Length: 399
Ligand code: CTP
Image (cartoon, rainbow, N blue to C red):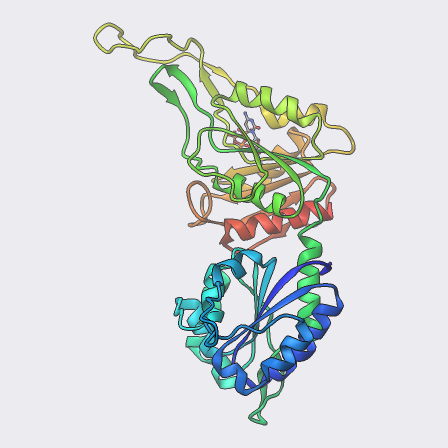
């Protein structure tokens, strides 16, 4: 999994830096290209010469070369990286990463990195347990960084506790597992509906809802990052996909969404219905703006919109997977399971408006997932929508 991967290894100044030599050797042996960036303190623990010899690349510690004046571009390094690993990550480096204190090359590279960042903390048990370190680690997690938890063991202080850096073999495995997961949808075509639909009353008014599309686009990004060919059939939203290659088909009404989905579904392996489709549309949308003075409009005649999920469910082939969402306010589990059966879904993701932080417009969500094949439902705590997307895609891959 690591063959040909560009890995920036950031080494900060802790005793565990002596293990960096083995880490570089294992990464190079696995076929990765390694660029080491050290903090000035790290040089006291391991010689740059050892690391440059093992990696086959000059080690970077300063912003520019004292001899030639050549500037070391953290921006180029950040763009070059397929991932960055900070190992060992001392309490001080973790704090600087959390707060953006860009006073050395490791931190500037971290701030410029576009790729996933892995952090392997290493420190004394009391430093590790301190509220400030714990808060900083939580901040890194909230930025999407992946923490490789330290083990419990004998520390440099001869005390025994949590703070021992994960062994180089464990770090290499964490990276390999990540890259393996990041490819588990390769070759699959995924259709996602997202956002609200607008049902036209006249050229300036519509019936709609508060959906922002965030959950659907988070799923699109996650599926694309894992190698899928993704198309989002999207109602009017302000969000955009972050991943390259996610195709967006923009529609406005439920009818248009259904037409676009029918075309795309025939070729799809997986369809995820996150759109908040308006259940009704005005029966006679006006061509011209309805004028208050001239029209005594006391009520609107409505017609029921097509149920997109149910209609795809009817034509679903055995090799296709259809996933729905259910936003409920009461009798949540019962309603969600009934929807799954009615629409021929394989899986339904339920969120409750009773949970603060779940539902429309928020950046977080709390979901419970039900399965048509009767397997035990999966309940998750409140998480960012990006993390919820990862959990959902993990479940889809298992199915
Ligand atoms: N859905 C759809 N087309 C519709 C209505 C819903 O594709 N016209 C999809 C949604 O994208 C979601 C699932 O069906 O995946 C459930 O949506 P929801 O609005 O909760 O269900 P409804 O069937 O509209 O039920 P109700 O509004 O009565 O709760």
